[in-house]
Image (cartoon, rainbow, N blue to C red; front, top):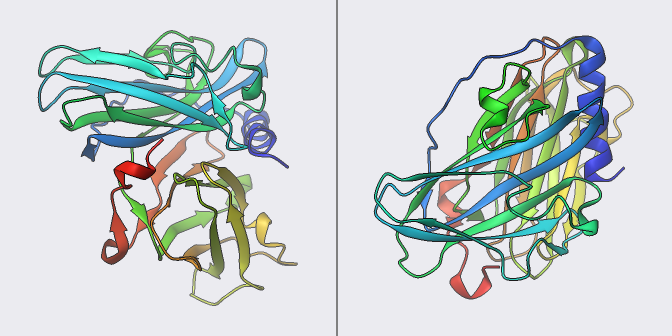
Length: 285
């Protein structure tokens, strides 16, 4: 199952369990970098509802021009070839974007509705702030996920500015009550990256055999946890350790935990600080 169908299956399943409509809950982005990876989703659920992403960019360090280039879940460039430039002419200025304003919704290569983007300062190198918001909404205007009373599944996270060469992890998952967990991993470089994932129950006992996945250059992989591990009797809760079997920087990611009450946890995969680094300028999209 590809990333788009997998995400859609989870979201539709939660809709049948019943949604709690959440009010606006703005959260400040935790990371400021002059280059950042952001998650991209825009999946039509029918009935005018979309599982989609909104973006907030802020020039907290000074005027900045930010270029955003996007990729689908099959490591293909989507949207305008040159990317989309976001001009922030003053310190503190804010700009709101959606998959539509980034030019990817109309691209036929974005048929799965899942992917990622790379945002980078064009010339100044000044850091900027990014907030990614995911949710289910019928309001596709910039900021609609957070501000529309019809929105649900609201979760926010930062753009990611560091990649890992070795250890990372998903701190906790649960399937209690029908909860669904997606682990989304991205290889921001052009060279393949092979990862080994180990599933643990909440007591720290390994479950089944390690799972190996090779991410092609600029690729995204969406894993449904714990189902992706193929364990006959998967644990109800636990964690996942991720290690790289190939040297060099490259991978990063997010996890999305959809809970039966309609709430959503959207967070960054934890990277070991001893082996993190910004993506090399020569390797950036």
